[in-house]
Image (cartoon, rainbow, N blue to C red; front, side, top):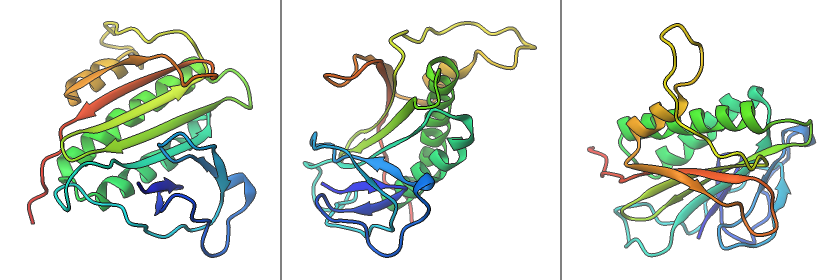
Length: 194
């Protein structure tokens, strides 16, 4: 399995490559196999990850990144997800849908769960041959609920957007030993046309 930090691929156990950015720009990542998180600030390189449609689809290709629960990180999360999905060679319309749905879940997590300066949001992407699953975890135990927004309202449409773009979505309890919840959605990737 390949892991990604700060939007760049690397293999599990491989340290950062090249010079690092300032510690404030460091992103915490963890292999999806459940190993302990690490903080890195370098430019990791591509490992032995398989792209969908390539050599089978047993082992997932993944990204797991933890960022501060702060709205100023939204653009970094969008760029990171976009780079990863482009590397996976998903069609542009599916990349757009996945990035928009991820952005909505990230915004919800920041708005409703980011209570303190040390709160974080973890974005995880897992791509197998037939499913892309994006999970956004935050420290709040409050489950999201879909609502109907007033036409003039500036918020309240996030989950409706996710539901319209995704093949499925829902919530899950947090990882063992962690507070909060996970909100996820899935897309069934199609092969990109050359």
